[in-house]
Length: 255
Length: 321
Image 1 (cartoon, rainbow over the protein chains, first blue to last red):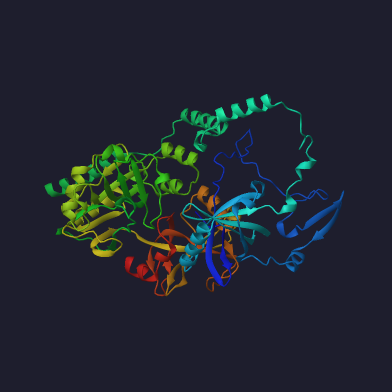
Image 2 (image 1 turned 180 degrees about the horizontal axis):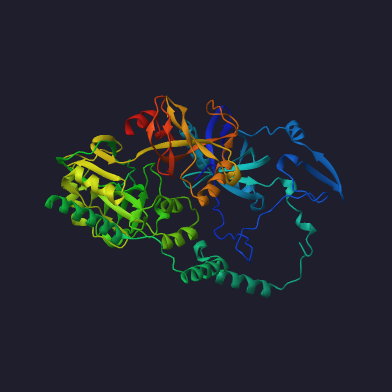
């Protein structure tokens, strides 16, 4: 497991060296694209639409499309003019009550672990946040972006949640039919509530699995099973190796 | 901390010339991944820990420890992949750099590993037995461990080390390990009680960069720049450009590009140098050390996930090889 980010958390005068690991496992089922005729990998090439030539990375700049086919071009030098201030540290701006942060703002999760020398301050921060039931918010630079992040005591450590900025969330009022109220009778509402209460039980997330993925995996396994696949030996081979050695030793003894 | 959670750095061996002594037992040197196995039969839990103390249990679901033990036990041994009757590094490597449960599950069936137990550190009756003499621990191992399809205890012979070494090398094995009969298990120590006797000079080096390749290797790399730590700083010990298979080169060149860095680790008067973060360790075979402590004619053997870069120090290079 490799850290995705290395830096520090600062709050007040304390600086805590930390490492950040992604909490989400990579996708288990990833398919490669192959040429059906000969099984070769399909690769992407970066080709210029205008001249038809393949271009290398140092020939590529970024453009922001302001209207159809009209771009504002930003070079590496331009990007350097706007430095990411928070690359190496997460500065905690404030603490807050977890209930204030709506579920819609969460985007991505990471685990934070203390780096060398940060163990004590890390533990203190974690424990104090837990005992005051508080979360922290700050900013963090990662992969060329300035992310809004929240920290929370979680299980045995600290969880870091990447958050959406408020202007990234679509206003639900734009959605047709949103917020419309309809006339219902008390009986209807009662019935619906009863139905809900009848189906309500404690949540066991392990009961819900990606059945489509599992079916695909079974399919892959079945296709594998058709082949002669075991290529390696087992204990018998280890034993026969040892026996052969002993036997040859005995032979030496005999002479 | 319970016995099951204890972190144990395995006992290590020094290098030695072949010798025969009645005070020692001799066993085959199995080359794979060193692994301490914690088996809790009461709660049906297994924990496999490598020499870096990392948990590798999830990588080897095929190792059926419950079948071979009927009491709580801690074993020391080696995980190997056997191909054509001998341990295979390239196949073991395939098991070591795969992530994702499903792929691990498939590989556990297509290239299953074997656990070769050679020591026992804990059992239910006696608790920790690292203070038992080796020969007593071997007796315990004999009593409690049944061989299964994927787990086996290694055989040993007494006294005749030179002959065993010769025969082992003839068969194509790496060598043998000599262990003093009355020695205790010294956790985390490299001691003369255990001596490895092997034919080839091998060294574990840190991959600190690569040189660009030409022709067929233009897309991957020409050679890997090797280093070891000397007084806390990386010291160049040579380049290795042979011993890779194509599949590995393709995969590894992508991995290298992910960890590329600008700052050079040391001065290197070569063209097309790329530096990487010093996180990968590889084992190479070589002819000899030159006077200025460079590897002569190194050949790549494998990546070592079970050894941390910090463990690769110049002192070991000199004394181990």
